[in-house]
Length: 472
Image 1: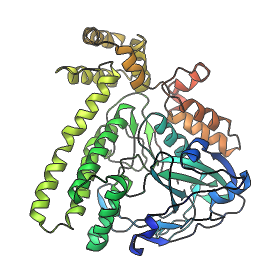
Image 2 (image 1 turned 90 degrees about the vertical axis):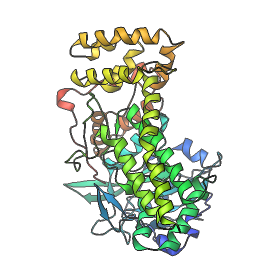
Image 3 (image 1 turned 30 degrees about the horizontal axis):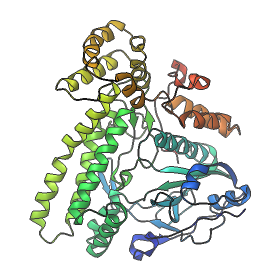
Image 4 (image 1 turned 120 degrees about the vertical axis):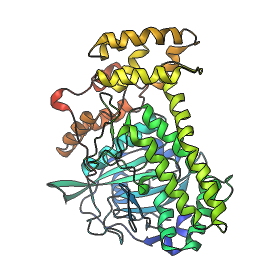
């Protein structure tokens, strides 16, 4: 059987200012580590022989119909504008339209140098590739919009980071790789023709009902508000919410120093490069609003009546905090078993979170245990839970099926940081059993899975991961 990918490449038909034509750099001895059969089937991809797929997804063989390119964008990184970034270690092979009618990009990440690499080698090592594979697929299983992983390949070559590491390439799938930074680069350059073409393309591809630039802004705002509330509801911390990592499609993108919280605290930071806590867990809603405001600033540049555009964009962006709060409240209501709304619900949820932070309660396990009546054991001082639970139980008594609501809102399984690190260390030694086991458990995160109970346990003191790294 021959690998077949039904390409239909709309981005490559855009003007040359949007990208650099770039083929991936070949590698020495590619070996297929993982292939996502379910995703391939959805995308209309026919798998080939293992060796052929290893060559293709390592970048050694360009499949028929591909038009390899690296995309241009800029972005604010930790609040500071960088006028040119772009795909420094990635090549977009092309797009397919799946059986569900959705157009998706196929991108090789870690495929070598591009014109946007700056001083980088354009490569990735095995750890971050497996990390993104596992966590992005876990996010999909959690029901959260995300890029996905189609394949992972070892390159047979060494990548130099803090030490020599085994090289790897990830094949990433996204509804597009359009970012806030894609708009920023043309706005900053005063290239209004490209900015208008990009705006029209984004509307056509993602939000065909949107009316003009401000209609696009409103759609992106809504998608981001929903997404961030979903992150918060599972204790996810992105780690690098720069504008070049903010997807126009409303998907989670770029799993660098991301992490899921173990014990809850709103100021939790894992990213080794976030020294000031800009992207801490509790700051993510405000940063999302800030990012959308940067998109508004870029989109306004193409409008003839700038003053009217500023006023409309301001109204759109200023509505985002309340919108995000509404989504957050809906999500957290469900997490404590509430399908209806009452005025005191916000206080009830906030009170629980405060007590969790004071008592080092595990975020995931505490919410899951609410549905089984065992949550008090998550608190260092169980009386802190007891005094809250009395009010909560009176509130859930007015609900029809609170336990069923909680079960579908609170996963049992998340990709815990220490398990991800253990999986990576095993894979570096050639043992992929932990990777396969973790992937299997995370594919049905809301189910009780007795064979994987150990994966629900928080880390022992010696296993705690305090910092995560970009590391690609």
